[in-house]
Length: 276
Image 1: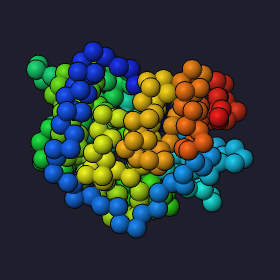
Image 2: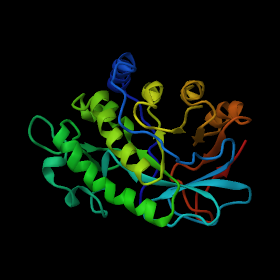
Image 3: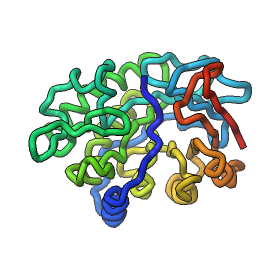
């Protein structure tokens, strides 16, 4: 089961992000275009259910669920897809389910694993590999569309900033790849959300990204930067009270929710859900 990707920042990650920010705006416009896709309603009640689906609380109009789940009846549904990394070892979609040639490797030929999630990093460094990986991820996008989801949440756009990646993947690689997926998603009638990666938010239109899903923008003092790029088409998710307090400064404009870090289903141990 997919869980949230709450970010752990590193010195290298910050340095790579600064380089990425410096290159924003110089890329040629992407081929992805949002033609007649419906964006999530602005400032609507939101629930983040990627750790397991359950009956949405009263007042919720927008919900995000894993692609393996079914959409919530009568609501605007966002379909979570782990697009830049495999699932964890031993889980369906884990490293063993992928062609080894499509997994990023270190200088010794060892597959690079994100230690926080035990997930292999997908190697999006060439056009051919990006296309092959995208073709596999498109199967999940097809699943989202067939089930009746309204939008996509393509997670781990910011994988290129991970310390373990060591700069082998760049912001340019990430944007070239996500344009393949956003264009395909739009062709299926799905809006496409940008997950985190505030450094690339100014380039969202060229990347075919229609709205933002931001984890811990309050904790990292980034919320205003998402609003500068996306206007009020943003959803903020926090995991700690301090971050929630800051994110709620924008709660009269956008959707804001606090969840437990494991995004537990309602009724389970550790479940937390708060709103502004």
